[in-house]
Length: 303
Image (cartoon, rainbow, N blue to C red; front, side):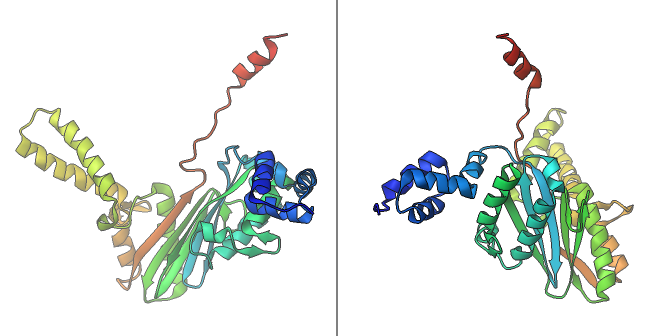
């Protein structure tokens, strides 16, 4: 049996694109025979999966689940919308989301055990089976101490699975069913408006400063004195906060009141929204635009 050195593992990794741990396992299973290890990885579907890893995965599913006073959001991506309707992919999304309750972050979640190995191994095998690249992109939790976490799934294709997932934490006293309904309405609002923060204090200072700079430049184009411009900026920044801060936004179901006012009225002042999270499928992922005309032209140019 050949010695399984770091160099041998590295060589197998470079040859197949498979992760170091899987390469080490393959070499152990094949007594250090490099070519046999390549075949072993191919048989397991790992080599096939690795070759797909550089392909953009911006479709898939956002999964939403609530357990007691904790809610979780998980985004599981694939290459095409078609895969989101595959029962095996949906099962994977649900299974992984259930495990997210016990995970600290997405990297920790990838190490959790399933009936098919770790989450990472589970997805690797699923890639080989379905034939598309997949990525477990992110997860987030919303928790309350006394109250409820209300879930909402937009464009749902199965229970808790869709293209937009929202969680809203409602802290306070009252009937859990009623509080959940209030939270669900706020969650629907969040899905429609995608606020940046719960309150003004929660806004990222860098984002606020950038917006202030833009508004300052626009105001200066008016040619008005600096003292007047300062007052203009104050007004514009207040308006900006009303657009991006959840509690200050006009409630979509009744624009005459803010979200904060709606919750206060609906709960008799006994509860308030203390947190929220929203995932929009593929948000921020740069998708590859295929130029089919150019591709066809290149294929026929030599004819």
